[in-house]
Length: 312
Image 1 (cartoon, helix red, strand yellow):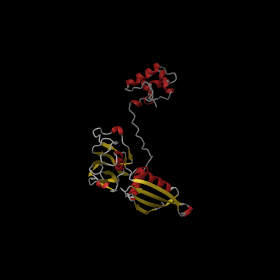
Image 2 (spheres, rainbow, N blue to C red):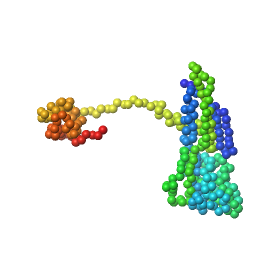
Image 3 (cartoon, rainbow, N blue to C red):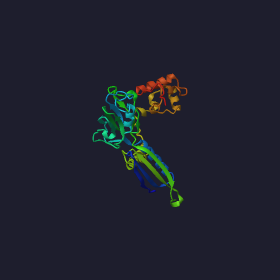
Image 4 (spheres, one colour):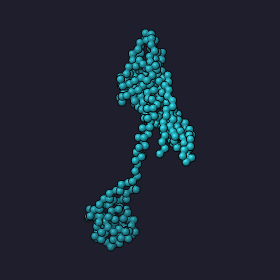
């Protein structure tokens, strides 16, 4: 089996605390780099769990098109700024952050007060600007999740009309790019490839951890296929009842009915149990009188046939 190695050749932290890591994986057989790059990219972009703001409550505001006295930004701008906050929650429950600020002040993410379960990644992220003599009271709801979750307008909690819902973007990975380069030819003249993978996160997770989580999720996805077995266990045939073993002769049928059934390869009660009343009528030279005779004979030994055939 071809062994490859993983090298991180670059690592940077942006002004907004975002993190970028560049990894080189190789050597790989032809086609494996594209397969690996596609799989990792899809999992990194949509499969990792992250933290996002899901709702905001602003004192004195009950709809998103309002304005806050003494605040430069309107409510929509404040909601968009809150949506851009980079947080990391370690709790499975909804966490709430609060702030009360008096102007003049520039409100940033550092002013939010959370429990010890939530950390703010980019403290300098602006939220609002308050003028002198005014104040802003804010409450932010934070949750963990995967992917993108839009607001369900028809399912809002009518008991909290002042809780403004926000479309939640939980994805901690912002960008993933990969390129495939050819490397030296291997044994037997087969070509080798090298995968160059660039991962940029929002800072709530490192590129190394993002890569590890994506790889583990792919392993979990493919593990059942590695142990797939298509061998079917033989079914246990039900033991035949004593009545089904009764030969056709012991039903004491008329000669006409008996001969017609024999020509149809019916030799015992078990053979008859596969027929319905309609099936009996389709036997050559077998009329309704003979069919009724067979039904009555079977009922005497506790067996009944359906009137119509069972649909396939």
